[in-house]
Amino acid sequence: MVRSYIKEARRRVGPKRARIVPIIQRLMADHPDATIALKYRNDLELLVSVMLSAQTTDVNVNRVTARLFEKYKRPEDYLAVPVEELQNDIRATGFFRQKTKSLRGTMAMLLSDYGGEVPARMDDLLRLPGVARKTANVVVAERGQAEGIVVDTHVRRLSQRLGLTRQEDPVKIERDLVRLVPRPDWGRFPHLLIWHGRRICDARRPLCEECPLAADLCPASRVRG
Ligand code: SF4
Image (tube, rainbow, N blue to C red; front, side):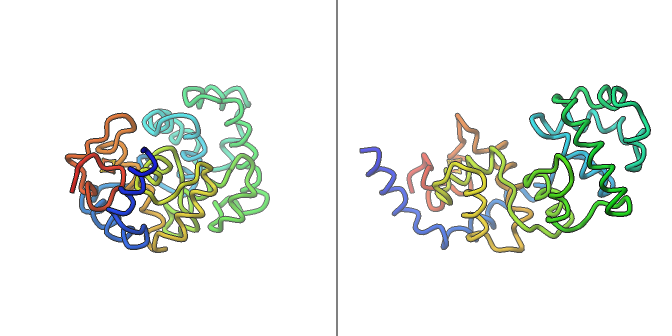
C-alpha cells in the first residue's frame, strides 16, 4: 500500500533529472537570501567558524566568534596562548577540548606548510588536523570553488523527501547529488535546501500548502496537483 503510494507519487512528479533545475530555480526565487549563516571576514575566520560549528548551531558559533576573532587574528595567535585559555574561549561551542586540539593542529600546519594562509584546494584542506570532508566542502564552496555538495541533516532530509536520493549515508547522498545538480549550483544548493528546511519544509510539519515545489516537483507533497 505504502509502496504503491510512493510509486504513484514518483510517477506524478517525473524523473529527478527533469526536476532538478526547476527545483533550484523555484527555491532561488523563494529564498534569494539563502547564504551561509556563519559570520566571517576572511578565509581564516571562515575555516575556524566552520570547524567550531560541528555539533552546535551557527547562532552559537557567531556568539563565540564575535569575541574570539578580536583576540585571535592570525594562526600564530591560536598557538601563543596556553591550551586552557583557548579551551575557555571556545568552550560555549561544545566539544571544546577536541576542537582546541584540532584548531591548534590546524594552525601549526598552516604555518609550517602553507605560509600561514588557508589553502584553496580540497586535498590540502583535508590534510589539516580535524578538518573533515564536510568542513573542507563548506570552505571551498564559500570561496566560490565548490568541489562537492555539503550534506548536513537538512540537505539529507530534503534530498530524500524530494526523491533526489534513496541513500542514508551522507557520502553516498553527496555522490547522488553531484551527478544531478549542475556544477555552478553546487555551492548554493545546500543553502537553498537548508533555508527551505528551516522556513517551509520542517521535519515534522512541512508547510506543503505554502511550498513552491508542492504538487508538481515534490513526491512527498501533501498537496494534490
Ligand atoms: S511540498 Fe511539502 S514535503 Fe515537499 S518540499 Fe515542499 S514542504 Fe517539503
